[in-house]
Figure 1: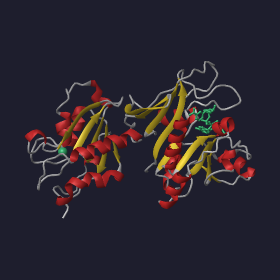
Figure 2: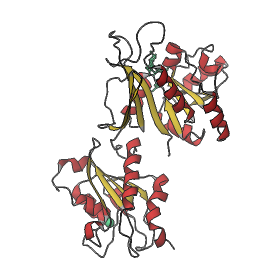
Figure 3: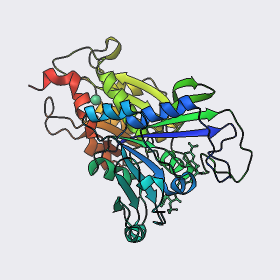
Figure 4: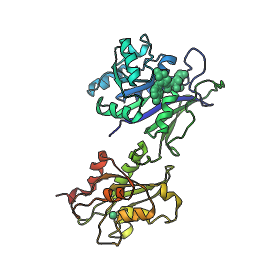
Length: 376
Ligand SMILES: NC(=O)c1ccc[n+]([C@@H]2O[C@H](COP(=O)([O-])OP(=O)(O)OC[C@H]3O[C@@H](n4cnc5c(N)ncnc54)[C@H](OP(=O)(O)O)[C@@H]3O)[C@@H](O)[C@H]2O)c1
Ligand SMILES: [Zn+2]
């Protein structure tokens, strides 16, 4: 199920804290950075915060600039993004600014929390996600029911930590503030646990007065059948590589990337690469790796078109090459049509051997783009 693009936004002290322990909110950003945050807010469909941040900071979460609000209206969007909060307990203060400012409000909670919230009579929609709060279900709900394509998450730490640990964040916008908090029981940005983020890719650094904005993208593939946000980035790259193939009237243009569990790119390839008129994308990528590379067993192969199971040009089809390489996970955009082979089922053949095959159909159009001339 498609998710929104999830953008985490936070400001942090040099010693890694989100706040101090005083009663007032600690101002970590600079005035120009608050304006940058305002611009990001104006660009999203919804802003999400945890119930802990409502209790601690009592934020309004507005788009402050009248020009940005006018531009949203001119673009056919609501004046303010949807405001979303997450609470397990349903213990929310009806007097908090969150309920009385800005756009529509939504509480995402558990079955038990929903009973409590409904008694409060808040001017907000309430949706129960089940006995426990499941982040994938939450994101699916925001996308499919609320039409949220871009979600900005403004904390606090427990929310950011869970989204990064579960591989659900597309981007982290982190502002480093030139001060120390120094109080051990102040809230930290990130808590302990296993992060499914890999080594983050640095997208941008930008000084904003005395703070520094760093934009990062997680890189780690998902696990088994569960996609991560980074799976989308890698599959998009595979689709882009398909565009580099020399054109052909008799074969598909396909791109492939092999990525290690920790998000390291191991190899990439595309059809008819380097003057070989019959090489396939997955074959070209795997051929660049040592067959004994221990990272292959936990690697993911991203391929714009599902791996082939029949081919005349070489003894082994790509599904076989993937199995022989020991790879246990494949992410693809497009199931093979009957253009050259009838009833091809590379995904089924791999799944029958215990390989997890994830199909992300939202990339199908991108995978097909360099193959339009083959589809009558
Ligand atoms: N510097 C910054 O950029 C920034 C940004 C935001 C916040 N902050 C700071 O962060 C602190 C608050 O952070 P926080 O980590 O305590 O709170 P938080 O992340 O805002 O909210 C945590 C709350 O969200 C709900 N929740 C989260 N995950 C859940 C799950 N899996 N299941 C059920 N409920 C879940 C729970 O609500 P219930 O308790 O209702 O069950 C939980 O107590 C404040 O000090 C604030 O100033 C700083
Ligand atoms: Zn092939």
